[in-house]
Image (cartoon, rainbow, N blue to C red):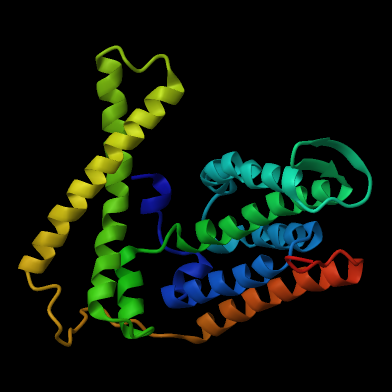
Length: 260
């Protein structure tokens, strides 16, 4: 457990209902999914970074959690660079791949877009307690209790994967297997982690069924989950952020709908 996890819950977004956070993610994601241009993605990304103080997360922690996204985002950008519809000056071709002005612009826009889509998930849910999320899904979103309890159980086991990975790493080093062959070590450990996840999930599902969590009965919840004026402000802020990003793209003439 990190210092961030045990820090006092004093951030402004800590008072926002988890269901509102889910709605904010949808609001921030949908417009970025139907358009593909660098301007709207860049503006959205800058505005999201300016909102980091509202989350209670240090910028250092945000940067650390963005590392996996930054490592895999170029994969989408490269595919767009090579196989997007050519336009403008063509710089080179190879079989079905063509690099042109349009493909360069689209690949850069996709790169920014992937980061802009992932960042809200990190900012909004890094400090959200799984139990609070389950309470909100059941009481505010009115989702079935069976689904909610499954989400809660899955969220609670995510942290165990980190512990499993750390334990496997230490065990391999103790046996002299952790100093070379990083790619092979990564995939072998990932396969073992997958096996652990399947076994743990099966055991957990059986235990929950045995305790009656799968029964089709009306359930009560120990902690109430309600909406407040802060939720309306947060959702309005997300709508405003998207509006500013799309307006900047339209005014600059860079706005482009996916597929055009």
